[in-house]
Image (cartoon, rainbow, N blue to C red; front, side, top):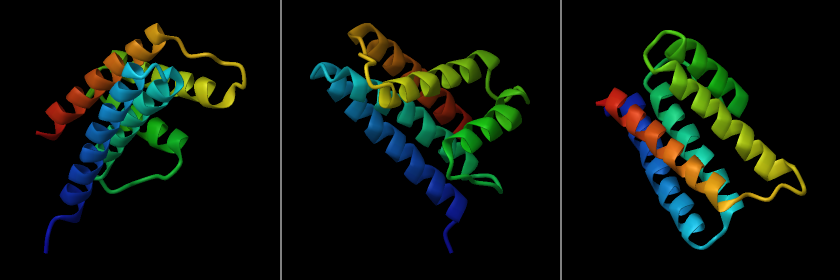
Length: 128
């Protein structure tokens, strides 16, 4: 029988990588709100890839992020600066998705993609 946790982690990591492609495409096509949204989801799926190897999993975003920050960032497994960037990704995604008059800029979308790539690489390094 295959290792379910490793398979799930690999699946979620692939989701993160595919979502990064969508974020980059959205940026290229000047669809900045979607680039911001997808950048957050890159980090969300990557975070869920880490959690797949443990004993707990969550559906709600706030639970995933809180657990990751408590068990992985506060424990020093991932740098605190990266945890702060993850929080910023989440806040901007929420603002972009839920504030009616929020207009995402090209610069913000580019920043979010850079952070998403950094986060994804940190997760890949951890998983190796």
